[in-house]
Length: 277
Ligand SMILES: NC(=O)c1ccc[n+]([C@@H]2O[C@H](COP(=O)([O-])OP(=O)(O)OC[C@H]3O[C@@H](n4cnc5c(N)ncnc54)[C@H](OP(=O)(O)O)[C@@H]3O)[C@@H](O)[C@H]2O)c1
Image (cartoon, rainbow, N blue to C red; front, side, top):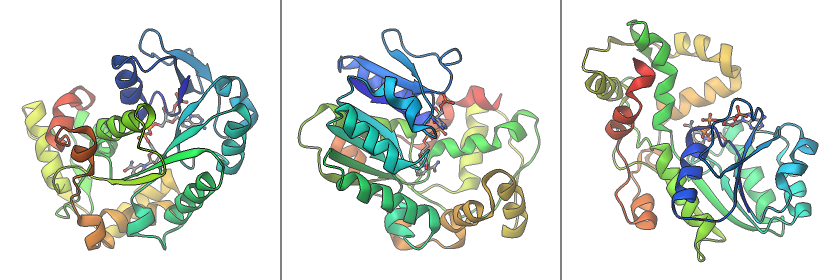
């Protein structure tokens, strides 16, 4: 049995589809609300909250492989519960900031989870993706309302990754031998700026998307309301305020592992245009 956490999210939903397509065996998706979740036919829906470890016990029963989103709950307890339940292999979605911005709080926390997993006695595969294409969904309300998208660091290009590529790598890590005890830094196939992303969404919609650059202070004020100050400040550093060569590097990890080119932001925008209509 494979258990996918974040199963209704960007990576998890794509991962369940892929696992089912290749006939990866019994599959279970974790959600906090099974009534709301729509999983592919044949995928068992399991209710549980990563923030409440005890609630995960039924979902973990019989599970041998686990896809785990980092930092959604008390990871020490979650990994203990997984090991006690008999999980043999964990594929962890961490973040590239562990190696690009190790001094930032969220990156330090991700490194701690990676180290906990490595010391857990379970086999492990660690994925360190860069910024997701799906972060553009933060603009969806403004675009749907035909308002101006207001973004800091409008002309800083990062090698944004399509979440389905993280899912493809996770699927191979879960189903193929030879992917254990490996850490994979994952990026998209090219650098793309927020301004170019808005242009790609405009092209997918067939209309203009008004766009304006804002300063860091204005962006921090908006983002801190949702993320808290520290996380918002860290996000602003890694999206333009404090970039470095390690973060800007386009890597071929996705294509090397999957055998197909990494998906572009334009592809993500075309597939997700309805979210902006
Ligand atoms: N965005 C980026 O640029 C970026 C970059 C690097 C790493 N990451 C990491 O990637 C992960 C996000 O992945 P994603 O985009 O696929 O996620 P997402 O689309 O934001 O979805 C989050 C998922 O987690 C579930 N969830 C939220 N809180 C939960 C809880 N307390 N217990 C159980 N499930 C919970 C939600 O499911 P239900 O509502 O159905 O329960 C949802 O399916 C995070 O760990 C983040 O740190 C993100």
